[in-house]
Amino acid sequence: MRATKTGVSNSNKRLMGYLPEFYHDIVDFVQLTDTQEAEIISSKQAIQLLFDNQFVMSSDERAVRRRERMLGIQADPTRETLDFRKKRIVNRYSTKPPFTMRYLQDRLDFLVGAGRAITSVDPEAFVLKVTVDIENADIFKEVEHTIKTIKPANIVYQQETALWDSIELKEHITRRTITRQTRLSTSWQLGRTPFATASEEVVVK
Image (cartoon, rainbow, N blue to C red):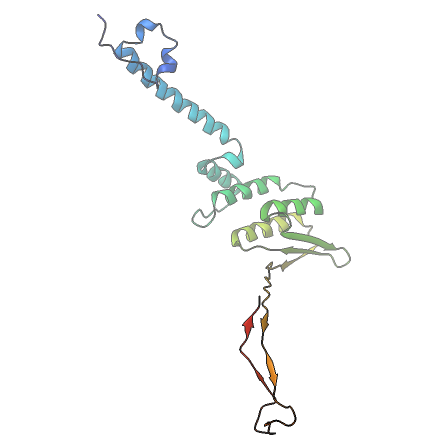
């Protein structure tokens, strides 16, 4: 005996397409395909999450924590953003010898942004100078960790701070009429009458 008929919903229409039309109006099969559709969607999401977690930049917070434990990183989620934590993990993975100045510059550009860090070496004094413009303390710590990991033991690291700002210039023009009072044969008196009088300023621009 067949159960009560019902319409096929959009959620189970895909699975229903694999069944003969005879089953499309049977409640039991409609409910069964609804449940199966939800399980399939959940499975697809789990597979996609597993795939995303294979890569650092697309992984979720749980996968980031696992990698941080593997690398011995003590993260502070209350202050550090998830994006920064991912960058730090990529930086730790990428810090592999051999090291060059170009490699160090590339790592600093990755951490703080292109043009915000400048590296130079004084080979005679064995000094590595790094000039950076950093406001975030967490990024500064990671930059310092990267430099100390990369630089040779006989090179002294000298950090210099760069402050970038902008200056805005505005132009204003005012005009004031000055009337001379020191003409001869007038009522001008030395010590009593001013040499000249000025009118109120008028804004021209």
